[in-house]
Length: 118
Figure (cartoon, helix red, strand yellow):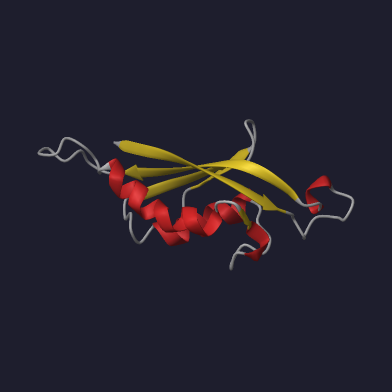
């Protein structure tokens, strides 16, 4: 069984590795939606895979580090593409959520990425 919880951040960034004329080379912001997916068996006693509060607790320090921030200044996100952000989130959340199986980052209503670890 797989559960998920969605979180939101507002953040600015620019992509320094794209050509200077690319629109994403300029400073801009997004209302990012980040979804943590956890997979595991349903506990017969509790009736769930994991308490959603555990996902919220694992997310809390990341929200503080990312929300209303300039992502390029966050250590490890100097080139903050959605792909790099998904890996960055994975690396920080996985120790608290061993059943983590996917991180989805959506930077717009129609664009994003899904990361399932290496």
